[in-house]
Amino acid sequence: MFIEVVKAEYLDGYRLSLLFNNGERRVVDLSNSLKGIVFAPLKDINYFKNFTIKFNTVEWENGADFAPEYLYEIGTAS
Image (cartoon, rainbow, N blue to C red):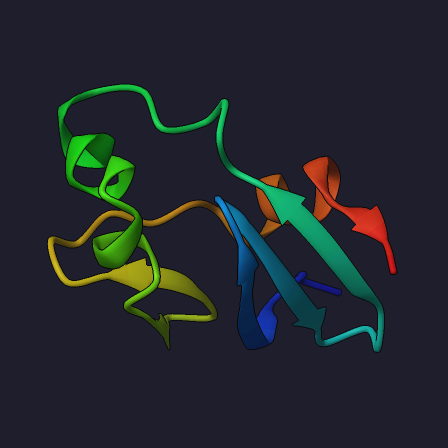
């Protein structure tokens, strides 16, 4: 089974609550993952809050995204 993000909610800081297609909900803290040019705009918390679910993961307006497998791996069960 491929892991996919089916729902995402902003919590606080750089944390998101994600629901995956296997029924698990995990909280991810992306504060240490915002490295590189494509992720620079996400350091603005207001920009970070504005994401969508696209191609089975969380994506921002500038095209920045993370592989759903990565999000699942770094997430903690909630």
